[in-house]
Image (cartoon, rainbow, N blue to C red; front, side):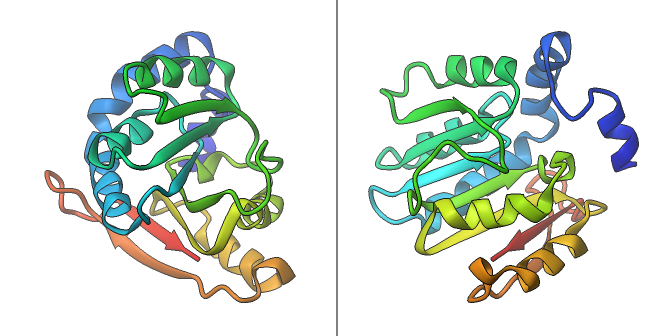
Length: 194
């Protein structure tokens, strides 16, 4: 299913696909965004920085910023059309949310920049998980966490192998749990943490 899904848009949402995804994602996966935003709001340090990798139209950063006005939230996406949509959705949040063009294997941020890195429903699109995970670790501050949420059929076993083989992530203990939402409690998603 994941391979078929990616073939619809080549893993990058542009033009018409971006606009349709924007309209649908807020309603179809809005429950997941709200749940993740609540979890982030509960643990992020005061005045902290949060990165949303594969932000798409940027609904998750908006949800986080609404719950925690003290946080700086950055959304990064490989698709220029998605970054433009995310920037539009962040308008009116007083610069607390920014949308940036970038690739998960070469993030445009300095080392140790973020307290928490999250990703929702984008990992199954990443073409190079082997380089993506160490890159997430690079931009994470010491003591920070990475949370990757995706559909249960996403390649989570590959993440285990990358974390185990990476010297940069050697001090990390990965974990997994199934995730439901308030309105649809059947766990459709998995959260991978390290």
